[in-house]
Length: 305
Ligand SMILES: Cc1cc2nc3c(=O)[nH]c(=O)nc-3n(C[C@H](O)[C@H](O)[C@H](O)COP(=O)(O)O)c2cc1C
Image 1: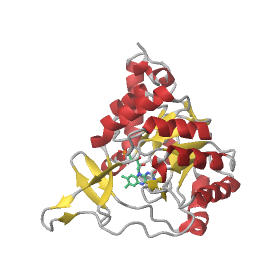
Image 2 (image 1 turned 90 degrees about the horizontal axis):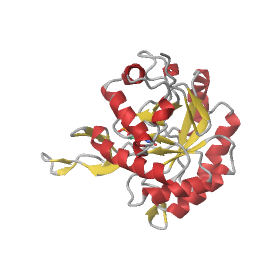
Image 3 (image 1 turned 60 degrees about the horizontal axis):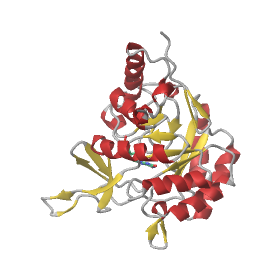
Image 4 (image 1 turned 45 degrees about the vertical axis):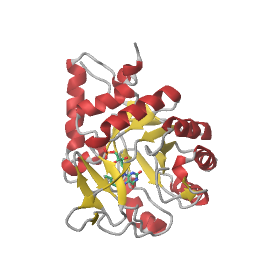
């Protein structure tokens, strides 16, 4: 039996539903010795900024039970470095590339989008709307449905490329945010980003992270991710790239059943750098053994009675 693993997300054709989670796969070169990036449905790259930024003070990571707390802070070498060093290598990859971006202002998001669109090689742009450092009226930008709507609307006007909006889970109203990005013109949603967390060192009696707080990722957040994806799937029509603690094919299937059309692998890449080909192989085997000839038939299937 031949099983169909191809999916279409936000107009982007992917040969399978496995993609990388931004910030855990660099710019597509770091895992090359283990497997070709072309194995993946798409590569979502590390979030870039327009201007250089040092990121957060160290220590930047702390282990947690069943997870990782990071406060990397999106260090960036800026636009010129990206174009000079990363773009030539990204252009050589024969896999859809989705570039993640963050701006310190709405104008910066728009400017980055215009510049990226001109480069002409990207399959899509992911708007990182989950950066807690961006503030508007006292609120983190990504938490304000009106700001998020306005941001997506303005970026939408600046490009014809598929636009994914990456939502924060650190809100009481993820559905409101999802509706806002859909109304603003996003073609898809990526969720979830990390969950606000911290660690304390008993030896120093101080926070472990230089930034005090960070974001929790890994298996610890999977149930939260599943439920938020479930809720958003019921509320919007645009496709979802689901993530948050996936470590094997079962997790990937659960995200798909909850409503994700593709699934991103993040923290698992640090634990098992060959996770993507392993999960892909297991996924194909599961479909075959269960007589499912098209992965798309499972998208949101847990909602059907
Ligand atoms: C070390 C690290 C760096 C990350 N950097 C980014 C980033 O630059 N942009 C972004 O949108 N998400 C970033 N994330 C969040 C992941 O893309 C993903 O949303 C989150 O980790 C949940 O998935 P996971 O549990 O499979 O890792 C980062 C996560 C980790 C662990």
